[in-house]
Image 1 (cartoon, rainbow, N blue to C red):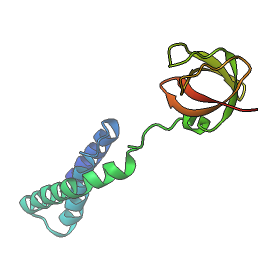
Image 2 (spheres, rainbow, N blue to C red):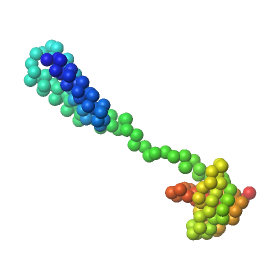
Image 3 (cartoon, one colour):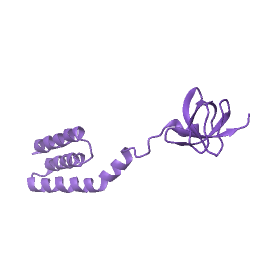
Image 4 (cartoon, rainbow, N blue to C red):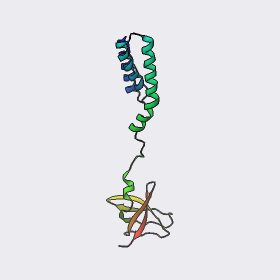
Length: 144
């Protein structure tokens, strides 16, 4: 009977690899435990009960743990937050009150930018990035 449990374990393992989700893995392990049991006991009913019991206990206890450990639930990190505090140069006039966006050259890249105050910022001014809103930098003028 151990050959049947081996086939069942392999089928569940292959299916789990094809359709990941940590659902069938536990049945594969349960089938392996039933296989070991079948080497000592020759009672298919008892082996089946062990298979189902082990499979469901593993499913209920370990599935959430493994999904939590192996999944990457952290937010996708971008390097844009590293721009906060950086200094750049205005290459296109930035209007006041966020009405007119301008352009800022920062580390060799050109970014759309708006002012964080009621003051416009002229070309050639040095600015500091205070925040990022969408794809725009929110900047404030700094003295040279």
